[in-house]
Structures are given as structure tokens and as C-alpha cells.
Image (cartoon, rainbow, N blue to C red):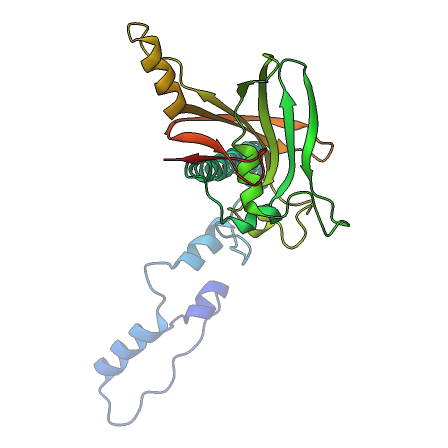
Length: 285
């Protein structure tokens, strides 16, 4: 009887079976040989591919094609362009919000300092760069205080003098009867914010965030016309309208940017000149 092994069944060669072991029945030997030598009736994947003439190689596996990769790169590039385009606008919004927060804190600080006639703000001399008296009628001005880093003895050397100058009334009548309308202007370095915005050391630091404040201090004259004139004059003497207009930022060339915010408040009390220096004014309850 002739049998075929798996290998030789493919090649078509005939071979004789091995000798039957001693002590084994012929039927058991035949069954064993049929189970080991006859090819499996169900061909494997390798045999199927061999019969169909297709041989699977190691590189023949699932992967992305060049077209798919190009499409993915195009989608990623489009998203990156959109993100990079929005990034500058987001940074500008963040900067504007930070400056608005600083200005709100600075405006509140200055308003309370003038309203209360603060005299102990010594740190103002390190932040105030310039104080200017502006004559609105003549459109002219002169400097009251200008910080000079080389000058160790500035015109104003205390915070009390700075607050006294900034509290100057905006309307008053000279002994000659001339009516004067003015406003006080100051360039101040912010005391709040990041260390880069505040600046370190020298008050004229180029990285410091500075702003200009314009102050007008009027007697309150918006009372009802039904009141008697004497009452209205007394009310104007004890009640003042304080207006702070803050503009920012101060540019290196001295100009002021487009930022603008106005603070208003009514101050109760008399505006009294200092007994030692008639150019300084303070609110007294």
C-alpha cells in the first residue's frame, strides 16, 4: 500500500510507509499512519494562497497610504493656521484686560488719596514722574514737578506735596477778578501688576507701565435752582465734584495711547490751602 506524506504529497512522490512496530496491531498502525501521513483535507491559509498563486510577504499588512497621510497633514496644517491666526488676538485681549484691572486699582487709589487728604504716601515720590499745571483757558502749561534721575533733590520730595498739588481747585478767581480754569496732569508709574509692568529700581524704567491722570476739582453747582442762593453757595463750599481722567499707556516719546477711563466722585468737606504752602490744598471734613 502506498501513502503520501504532506511534503511529498505536494511534490507528487511515492514513498513506502515505515515498518510496523512489534506488538502493535495492524489496524492501530494503519490508523496512526493515516492520521500522520495523509494531508489535512482542509487546506490552510498558506496552502490556499499557494494554490491561488499569491504569496503573502511580510510588508503586505494594513497601513496608511500616501494619499491618506497627505490628507491628514492637510487637516493638521489647516488647524494650525487657524490657531496661529487667533493667538495674537487672544494675547491682545489678555493684555487689555490686565491693563484695565491695573487702571481700576490705580484710579480707586488716587481717588481715595485725594478725597481723604492723605499726607503719608511716601512711596508716591518713587512713582510720580511728572506733575503739570495746565491752564485750560490759555492752553498753556508749566511743570510743577519733573523727576530727574540725576537730580537727588527734586522740587517735590514728599507724597504730601504731590497730593496737595493734585488737589488744586480747577476753578478760582484771582484778586483782580480774573476767572481761572485749570487742571492738574501727572504721569505716574503703576504700583500694581507684574514685576515687568511695575519696573524695578529706577522710576524711569523703560519697562514700567505708566499712565497719565488729568484731575479736575470743581465746586458742586448742580443743586436745584429752587434753593436759595445762600444755601447753594454754602453747598458749593462744602461739596466738590472730583473727576479723574486716566489715559494709558504713556509711550516712550511722551504721547499717550488710546486707553481712557474716567472716575467721578462727590467729596464732602472744605478744600483748604495748607498754612505753610498756599499752593497745596487738602480736603478737610
